[in-house]
Image: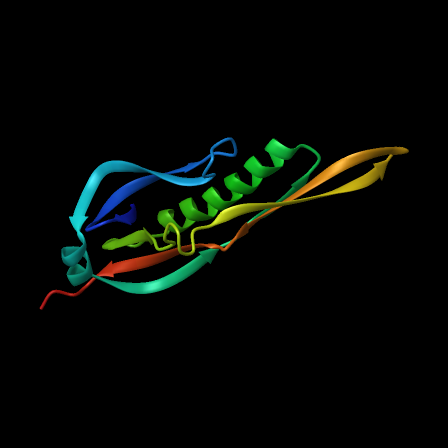
Length: 138
């Protein structure tokens, strides 16, 4: 399960990585789980932190950006799939602080005697996520 903090609670979310959106790297609240922040912090502890990065290159702008987003989403789902029982994945990147954005650069290349655009995309800063494990109950 993937969680993200919204104000005073952690809520389950689903990735919404869409190249045509204003905020390409987004999350939709899933409403599957909602835990008060104080309760979550008392119940879970950070086990590991990951910085997810991706890049893509290609001749078509939108397709290249979507490829980058698909690669980033795949990394996120792989981390989620590898969670052990009692663990959750938490999006730690904060809006307005260190939230990831897609970055584009383009250059002209000559292909078959014709000028063509070539697009490169990266994510900067990386998407930060943490794996949190339930504390042992005493």
